[in-house]
Length: 144
Image 1 (cartoon, one colour):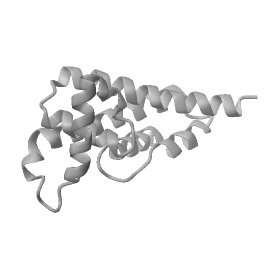
Image 2 (cartoon, one colour; image 1 turned 120 degrees about the vertical axis):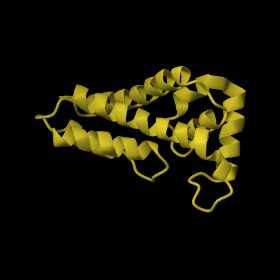
Image 3 (cartoon, helix red, strand yellow; image 1 turned 90 degrees about the horizontal axis):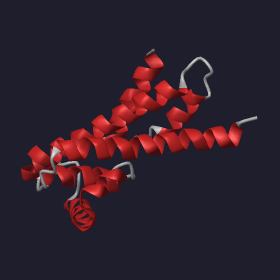
Image 4 (tube, one colour; image 1 turned 30 degrees about the vertical axis):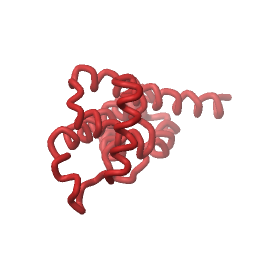
């Protein structure tokens, strides 16, 4: 059970502005026959989605502090994500799983006050699909 909690926490933190990667840990745990690949996928997807939601809240409430040194996203990164978001709209939320850019997309969607009922399902779909593809790829590579 602690393994599932750990994958949830690492996936959550990986989706925030912290420089972590959850994919390696997910693949490591997927090799453990005592763990359910489905539950690993589920907890990683939920954790990563909630981490994205954290970025959405950052954009929603903390953008007024963007000029501060401690602000987690540079203005250049935020502006790049904002251009992408304005070009592709809410569908760009499917790509919040991308490194660096995905954090910016989630943050910008908060800045632009994207409704949470658009944000959550699209982010969950994108992040869950990414983890499913990672696990499927490992299965294809190592299936006997």
